[in-house]
Structures are given as structure tokens and as C-alpha cells.
Length: 329
Image (cartoon, rainbow, N blue to C red):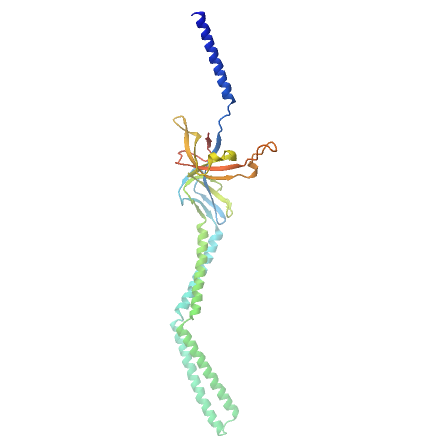
């Protein structure tokens, strides 16, 4: 190789080295690509007891897959059982009273009332005849006026007793009044409502899953007392997942409502390649003031609010779990 050729080779190498160094310095001076990191979340439902009681049996464990209506926990509540017995007894008593009002008096009672009325009628007729005789004798001066007055009083009392006996007979024959029957029926409905209420409370002693999904938490233990309204089991719906990103407002335009973007999940790979998922934004709202980016100098820049952005995948993501990281470049 001639000296000229060597000089050209060295020059070319030097140019290449300088170019490489220049490119490296240029790349080093460029800002790093902005990456937004979020995480997957899913709809989680807490199941709590509506009535207090003691945990009798746990029917599921964390990680179990459940369907709508799957039994989760059985509870024992003696108080509810006692109230149900009381309500049932009150309902039976009200039904008996209503049946009696509807049926009226027994045939024997009706016959007894008829006989009392006839006996009172006969006594009144006898008292009337006796009064007429004493009155005639009184006109002739054969009996004193006091005897006449006593006979008249006895006649009127017997007549009133016959009228009362007739009323008793009519009441026994016709049965209870319409108002009494309506009141008895209302008592039955009221007692039935109490029974239904207690039965509903008893049904709540067995907790069922309101959604299909996976049991994420079991917060109760057998034998423990559970107060009303405290969550005992949590179920997560893995079919209803979304990603949550915290985005500064000067970057928010990229994540406008209805917009779509691609993201990768580091935990999921297809043939060794990070899985890319397409998301669509459905929610955006500012976070509280503690998440605000404050300007470092007065008069320069502005306080930038941070927004919570939620986006759902356009298609179900197999093997995705709540808490997985999501990267958006």
C-alpha cells in the first residue's frame, strides 16, 4: 500500500470516528423519550353481611373462581331465628282471628242465642199480660197503685230484655261486621309482612356472590362475630379491567376522552416480545391539590394539575391481572 493510500485510509477512519462521536454527543443532548407508567385495575366488589352473626362456615378461599349466586359464607344468628319464631306465631294468631271473623258464630252459639231470645219473648209476653191484669184491678180499686207500678216496671224490663236477646241472636246469625272483618284481614297482612321481613333477614345469613369473578380477599374466620355492614369477602371481576395513568395537564392532550393509544405490559410477553395492547380513554379527572406540580420560581411557569386518566383495552387482555404495570411511550 502506498503512502497516499495509507493517508487516505487514516483520514477516512478519523472522519468516521469524529462522526460517531458527534452523533453520540447529539444523541446524548436529545431529551429521553417520555414514558408514562400506570397500572391495571379491575372492578372489585366487597360483600358484607346485612345482619350481625357468628361465622359458621367459610365456603370459598382466596383465588377461587365464583359465579353469580355462588355461596360464600354461612352465618349463625340465634336472634334472627327467635324473631322468625315470634313473627310466625303472631301470623298464625292473626290468621285464626280473621278466620273466626269470616266464619261468624258457631251453629251451637246461634241456636243458643235463638233460644235465649224466645225465652225472653215469652217472659215479656207474660209480663205484659200480668201488667194488664193488675192495671184492670187497679182501676177498680182492688190493688194499690204501687202494685200497678211494679207490674209496669217488670213488663218494660222484660220487653227490653227480649229486644236485647233478639239483637244478640241477629248478631250471632249475621256474624262479625264488615269493619271487624277488614281489621282482622289487615292484622293478617301486617303479621305476614313481619314474617317476610324476618325471613329476608334470615336469608342474609348466607352470603352469595353478586358478580362472577375471582375471590381476591377473605377477611373473615370461622367462629368470629361479624357486625353488620363489615366486608367479609372481596370478589374481583377480571373481565372488567382498565389502566390508570397519572398525567400532568400539559401532557393531557395525548389522552383526551375517546382517544386511543398503544401500551406495553412488562409482565406479559408473546414469544419473548412485550405484549402491546390498544387502549381507549373513558375517564379523566383532576387529582387533589397534593398532586399539583408547583412552579419553582414565582413568575415563571405555572402550577400544573395532575389528572387521573382511565382507559379500557379494546379487546380482553389474556392473563392480565390488577396491579400489573403498563408503559406508554
